Image (tube, rainbow, N blue to C red; front, side, top):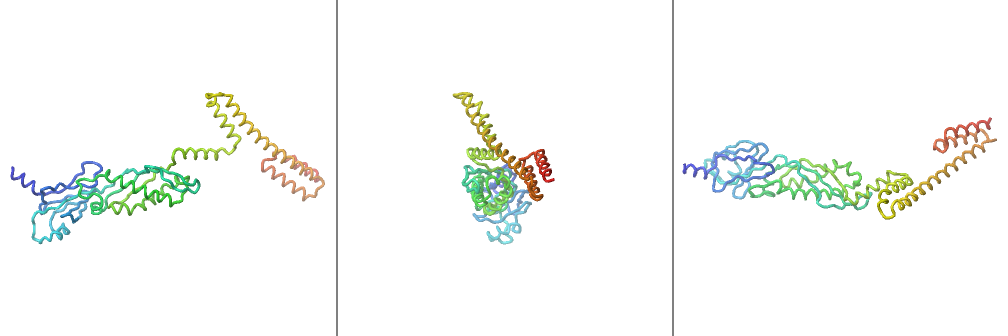
Length: 342
């Protein structure tokens, strides 16, 4: 039994890895004080890749499948060691497994607001967040540039680097796009596609493929959002007189609880009503003036030529179309002109 334990400790016949859970990108197979038996087997499962490293130099890469470890199946390692074709001794190499399945629902976001120049608002500060998906496609590049000789390398170990890379590219792209903030929501898919293309080379340098990228939200700081909401509200109101009255009426409950009570609110309400009445008076004067002009035009039609009367009728019809004259008023003036024409 002791002899078997010694042999088992010294030589490895089967090399394989089963992921124990989520989040592991690279795993170094335990090789301390052990050698790989020549003719042993390597099993690489779907969604995995394996990498042989000999004396610090990257040798062979294996995709999914089962391999018998002989000189025919590990040609690069055979070349590095200068083995003779009949050399069948156990050998020492480090073996790394890599998970190349999709790493989904990876979150990114701006830790602070970024300042960009907006066509409509000038300089604005924005925040954005979303998700992305990636996978390892080049284990050699990932080993050389990222994971190295660590026993295990995880998604969490890499997330900070990727997130900062994304935010840097996003800041640059938002500044270049020239899309006004109010149009960003309608262009999130297009921005995501451009960001994915812009980030492709950065991910490739790490041995990764950026498989999916989503911009979920772009927003303003709270204080700027309040200002934008006020501006939107003003655009929606239109009638300043009615808006002022509405604002005063809305302030009554608050004013009643403060010093001065409803009396203070009443003063504000009176000001609002006065403004509304002034605007109504101005509009009424304009209406009266237009109607008087229409009446004068009708009176001037007496004794005029048929051509002049037709021009007056056209003017009256235009006033009716604009809403200055009612249908009844128009018909009455029309009948009066036609009667005088006759």
